[in-house]
Image 1 (cartoon, rainbow, N blue to C red):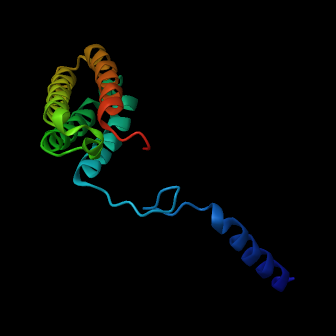
Image 2 (image 1 turned 90 degrees about the horizontal axis):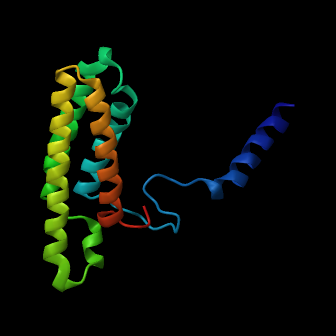
Length: 150
């Protein structure tokens, strides 16, 4: 009986192995190196998910402010980094496109600072409205500046 279980387990592993997507590889099997910008954005995204869940709860304002301030730090670092999608932009439009990206990130920093200020004043209603505004700006920025395959 033990042999049968072992054989079934091994067989199952071999049958499921082709369907496992290993970390660091894309669907087409190519390796993908993370850029500094992706690392900054990943850190912001991790904090953002928590912020959205707890912004309406005044008892979590102190923790939420810390999360928002970490997002500010990562957003400020992201301003000077170059998105991978820049390669898709024509050379003639590249400077304008990069300035647009930098402007959008600076606006994001301002909105995040406003969010932190609202939370520090325990104004969770205003903070919730800012979260919605930031989320809209985030979606718009990702449409313009994030590679389409991600």
